[in-house]
Image (cartoon, rainbow, N blue to C red):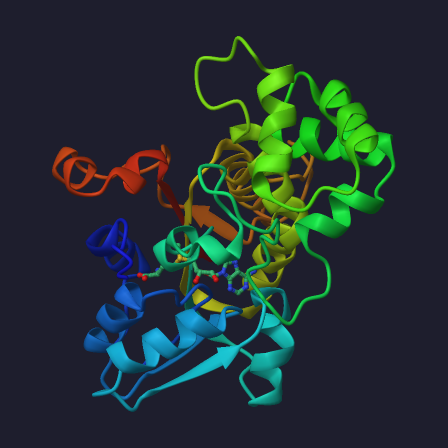
Length: 298
Ligand SMILES: C[S@@+](CC[C@H](N)C(=O)[O-])C[C@H]1O[C@@H](n2cnc3c(N)ncnc32)[C@H](O)[C@@H]1O
């Protein structure tokens, strides 16, 4: 199994790597981005985070010829503390290439796919306790419906949630697909797509950790440091877009008699999202939903 890195050259270009700088790859995965970052460093250092043991083992092999890096097995929500433990208080760039790697999607046993019958798991970090089964079999109808509606934009969220409660206990992906097939009978795409996306986001708390890491990044970045984020669905992209806008827009009232009217910490580098090229779309269908946004610390 191999993970095809998305927006490789673009991400490196927006990171604007200083050869002696300190960089963080928050989502190591198959190490495609990390490898190219390391190629640009001379005297600098890379810290690479991932919460998935398989990705880490794979990446170690990809990076076996390099020494100026450390892999940290952790959720990137602990970025600040993990770096502080290493006496690192400032960095020159952070890259986040969100979501799953192909290993995770293609490995049926991980339970991310609605196309194969497998245990409902969906944990990126297999040391974590909460998995998809626990959510489906223990949450209230309101909690379930909220997850499907907010994280999946599922319009039949209550119908799905009620059927789940009636059918408990659910064990495998097909237990859930049978329900979405009934509720979303007239759907054009797969009936379970939105519900599976929502569950995955809930199991891994993906949106909260993204909001947290973006705030930490602003504190950690040196002046002129870069924050580059690649997202794969609209909920993630909305968070990044709003965050960048808020951090680059002045909140001071206009016409105040003050010396500077700029209280912003970041400067937007990408006014619009950057998309993969046609050639990349053709080569890698998973790149189709990717969007890159980048900002610079002032
Ligand atoms: C899309 S892949 C990254 C691919 C990588 N950029 C490459 O070039 O191969 C995302 C990776 O980030 C990891 N990941 C996602 N969210 C994470 C989080 N909150 N903390 C740590 N790792 C995370 C996943 O386990 C997965 O391996």
